[in-house]
Length: 145
Image 1 (cartoon, helix red, strand yellow):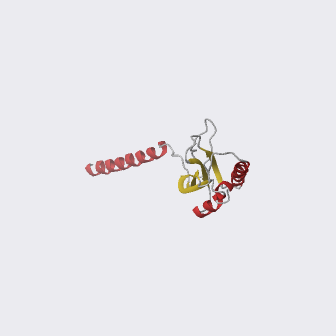
Image 2 (tube, rainbow, N blue to C red):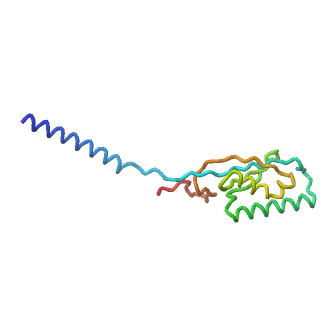
Image 3 (cartoon, rainbow, N blue to C red):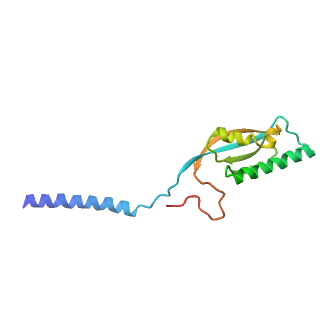
């Protein structure tokens, strides 16, 4: 009888432990899943040839700068772009999705404001969630899969 009781208690203990683990797994909230990837954060600074004057030449360069932003966005290389509003040395940012830092640099070098020396760039690799986008009001950042 003592041996049967011992076997029963061992069986009961194992069953309890197994149920506890199973319950923990099934009641555990699923964590959101997402992939990470590398983007390139481009900081646009005043270049050596930057001036505050708004000449026809400067206006033409700005027009080309905006057209270049549109082109890079349509190609899927530029995720986000915009100026800073405080009129300091740091003029704006780009967030680019390219295969390499060198590709990001080459694309920045196609910008008429960079070519003209009105802007210069500093590029930093940036690690963030794959597929980042500008969110609409109320939209969640992470979605559970």
